[in-house]
Length: 385
Image: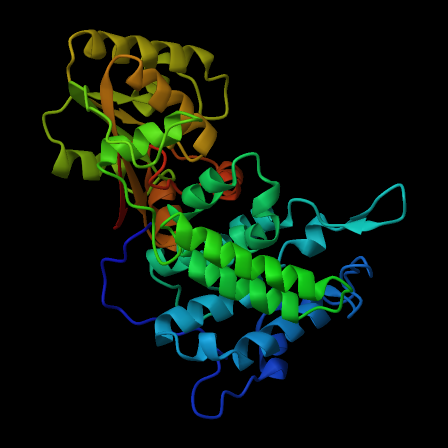
């Protein structure tokens, strides 16, 4: 899970506070355009007989504020869960469609909602200030996983599903958000779904991942668990790695070059930007030759068991997974370093770079961004700079 390395206390507007616990819904609607966008977005009446997405979101917020389990949370956690309750269906206006059978669905809204929530909180256009990185990511992950308690038993391996989720989000908070979500709707199977959330709570306790990330015998054991479908999470794997590869990740302009110079000076660097410059290939051009040359450089280092840095944006989980597998095949231990900064800072730095990335491309990268979690490599570090 992302660890917050700051004592900064962030405030989410309109989060009810003791002792009145007043919910100013009218103020929330006035403040946030993404809340107003939920008005008139239809939902399937079989699952949501209460009305449109805006009605449902208000009911969820009301139910959450009334739960004792939410009121006793530490103030910062309380605000995170409240913000996630407002944002949990933020992508339904974009994802909702009517199927050929006339049924309304919003497939993919949780995954898309994670990206939207991250962008909303990162840009902070309607907030006094953006939240710290760790807080922002907890809210975004809560949005991503808010449906897990209702669907975890349908996963091919429920144990792996909850353990994997625990690597990036607190599952007790996920369960609390899911409970408010269920109570804030009108549907015939509400009692059954609430029972399923209780089952989720008990199941996560049994897996040792309810109040925090599942603990492993070692970072290497954790990595190997997620590499193998059938591995026992209690197995203490023997670490036979012989050298380390540092895989950088972060948007253009976030400061990867400066971080490498400060923390890894003297370590060889495979830099995709430098290869593009030599080949006169833009970031929007065909990257096949760039990747080919970068991998050849990497192979030369790995054959010598020479530690090195792979420096590129690497903003998607799928791309990082390919690279991690590539490095591991040569016996490497992989450390992912993800760098984060205020969004306006990233855009400003990018505009001042010689190899400036077009802002349209920057926005696409932001939309595609998967912040790394602990399941992806032997070591994962997050730094706000």
